[in-house]
Length: 398
Image (cartoon, rainbow, N blue to C red):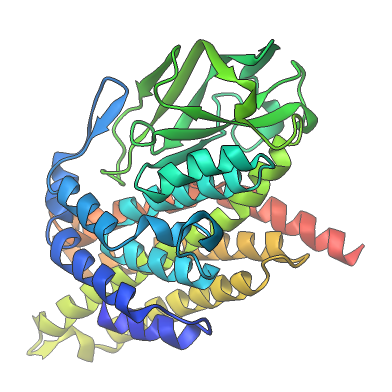
């Protein structure tokens, strides 16, 4: 991890809170990396609309709260310590290196924060942001069975009656389902298909008429809570509407753009962890009286791995510089596309170098490779990213 921090500092131009980084690294090294494999083996259970993590989750959570980790995602004017986007990205690479599931948990959490902050109601922001600052988790729910990449096909209905909206519908593939106390949900408020019918609401997990549906076990991301949100005649106060009715898709897309860069950061951290594990193995593994690292074939593969990781990281830092520019959406999609394809490629090279040992489930590379395969499906598939990039590219040339 020390090498990763040095590399990140060479890319970064922002000011870093080194004391916070040292505290975070101590937790990640001492509590997360030592137990993540055991946590993955035990997995998650669900009870009463809540997820139950295996030990030592409670200890990790308490330690993160103690160092003010949750405040890093909150702007200063809401009592947080969020200074710049590079610092958030820095955190995501560290989480991706130690535990990709944990990284994605906080990508989803940060997206919910950004979505709430995009609203106009200051009382609403203070109410929910204060809870997220103090350790409650957030989540964003967009996907439905018939509305994945095409958000305009969302059918989840929210019908206004007096001071409330009545929610009926189901969201699926929701990261942090059962962990979040605060959900930001994209719903249809006008009863017809189209982007202008969509609105965003903040809904608490204790809302009457809400229940959690559990999805099948995943091949990777074993401690990333993923599930379905099911609402039946659920009353949501009208002041939980984020921004204006019918403007929800635009708000959600802006939050997703930021999420893509952070997800790409998790992928870069995961890619470097795979490289690290393979490098340590190759130095110790003796073949033909020499370490594997002396083999030109192996050393070339590892050169490819390191080059791909740094190329992806370069795209991420480029995208961070494009925030608030016309090229931001394209840059964030390029970073996400390349980084998630990179980590799949790096994982495959790692499996080849480690040979038969990597085929066993209890091998760290096998576990990390399962996580790597899932990265391309999050925050929009690779095909979806290509569609966004081409659309933005043609628009800029037109």
